Every structure is written in C-alpha cells, then in structure tokens.
Image (cartoon, rainbow, N blue to C red; front, top):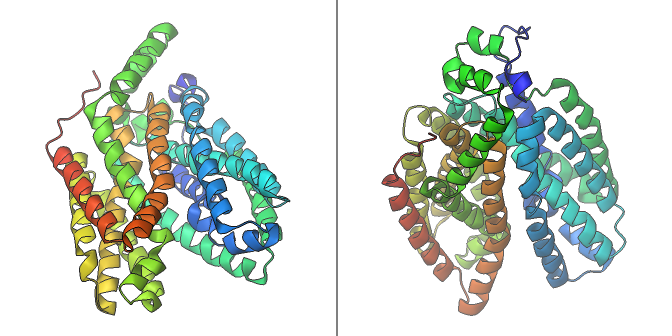
Length: 424
C-alpha cells in the first residue's frame, strides 16, 4: 500500500480520482442489500413458506447469522490496511456473490443458517467496511463533502435496488431473483479490480493540492523502516480504540443503528399503536426524503464544524423525537416525526462514514472502521429484539422510546464536551 501511495503515477483524469472511488464505493454499499434487514425483509414471507420455517425460528436464524457475521469485521480492516481496497473489494464482492447464489439454493434451516451467515458476514459486515474505506483512504480534510455525496448516492441506490428487487419477487420467485443478484455481484467483482484504486499517488496529491491532508512526506520517509511503520501503526490503533473519542463516536452511532433497525423493521406496527398504520408508506417517504437532504447538509457542515458536536446535535434531535412518540396522533404528526428521524439519520450516517479517517488518519483506517462497524452490527442485531421484548412486556413501545431518549441525550452531552483526539 505504501508503494502505491508514494507512486509518481501521473493522473489521467482532469479531476481527483477519489470522486470515482466515491461512486464505486456507493455501488459497493448498495450491493450489500441482500445482506441487510430491509433487503431480506423483501423475501422473508416467501422463505418462511418455501422452507416451512416459523417466524420465531427464522428470527433466531437471522440473529445468529448477524452476530456471527459481525466477526467478519475483525480481519477485514487489517487486510485493507495491508493490501489495499482494490484487492479486498474484488475478493469480498466475489465471495458475497457466491454466498447469495448459495442462499438461493437453501433447502432447509441448516443450509439457510450457513448461507445467511456468510451473506451477513461478507455483505453487512465486510463489504460495508470496504466501501467506507474506499472513500476514506482518499479523503481526509474534505471527507465530509465526499461522505455527504457518498451517503446520498447510497440512499438513491438502496431506494432503486429495493424497488426493483421488490417488484421482481412479487411473483414468489425469490430463488431466481436472489441467484440473479449473486451473479450480478460476481460480475461487479472484476469491475472493482479494474477501477478501484487503493490510494492516491504523490503526483495526484500535489496536483490537486491534497498533500496537506495526508502528510505524504512523512509516509515516504517512513518506508525506509517498515518495522517502525508497523509499530507506530499498531500503537496508533491501540490508542484509537482505547480512547474516549472512539467510544463516544462508536456508542453514539451504534445507539442510532439499534434504534433505526428496530424502528424501520416494526415501523408499520409502531404507527399502528397510534392508529396510523395506513400512513406507513407516506411516513417512510418523508423519512427517506429528509434523510437525503440531511446527508448533503451534514456533509458540508462536517468540513466546517466539530464532528463531535455535529453528532451531538443529531443525537439530541433523536432524543427529542423519542420523547415525542406518545404525542403522534395525526397523519401530519407521523410524517413530521418521520422527517425528523430522517434528518437525525442523515447527520449520524455522514458522521459515521467520515469521522474515523478525519479523526484518526488513514494509516489504520481499515482496522478502526472494522471495530466501529462491529459495534453497529451488534447494535443493529439487538435493537429489534429489545423493542419486541419491551412491547411484549409492556404492551406498547413507549417505554422503549423513553429509555432510548435518555441514552441518546446522555451520549449527546458526552460528545458535546468531548476533547479532540491527538494522533501524535
């Protein structure tokens, strides 16, 4: 990776190649759809009927697959830092493609468990980290703007992919659709090998005035002593994941992911508690639209304001929205509440994508993002279970939202007064 970073390869495009990587990274993240809850939700009922599995058994399989799949985060970051995003993205996307094709051939609970675990691991865990690193390795000072555009492209990609997949599976042909998606992923793998670049060259950094972002001269001088570089990198990684900064950002984004997965999975029934289930589609549209706008605004703000305070604002808004849940009693209120969730989500999403490289640098970005991604995956897996248990015990979602509000507010206070992390 150091050899590629310090290369004198001349840029052949009139603009910074990092923006090509932004597009490729967004496509890669969209490709995780079959490994995500909202993607699997499109075929859940068909799987239950086809394999004759009860909802409880499927939920157990999904929880186990998600938790085991989270372990795929552990090695992927090291691989990214050592051999680069080009090679890793090529291999991971190919393995995800094989896993999705294999899942389409599942004949029972055991084969479904194995293939779903691989799909979750290579998709939701590994490919998500690779996708973020493809952008993070090319941007630091301007990472907010890059990640804002990246988040918008992902949102558009997920909307389009969800609509197309949903339409395709309407006839009950989930196996053929899933097999086709797997083949598309296999076809995308060589595209990554051809177009993804792991890091900018020294000529590109100088031409596009970005040498101040990466301190290239320091990296170049360090190549004479590989052992020293590895030792310093390990030291930075250990200081990063043991710092209050990592845990404040990690827990803040993880809490949001837990709430997001729980709410979006049960959103229709949650609104049903307020007598507004028929307005579910309009609320989801408001959530998505507001999120897209918030992605762009948050991306711009991330370049001009403290990331910790921007995340604190997002969590504070989330805290208020959780407290307002009992007062949703009209269609307009449900749509307004959903739009607020979209704004909070847009802020937190951009921060999660951009914070790690901007705060901790790019040298150990893969490993640091892997650790953060594991927190969010575990939180996403547990969120729906906690909400479902709370509703079963209390008969409503109110207590769940009240507790979530307190946690979000506490994390917002912590982030607002958080001291900056120093790399050296």
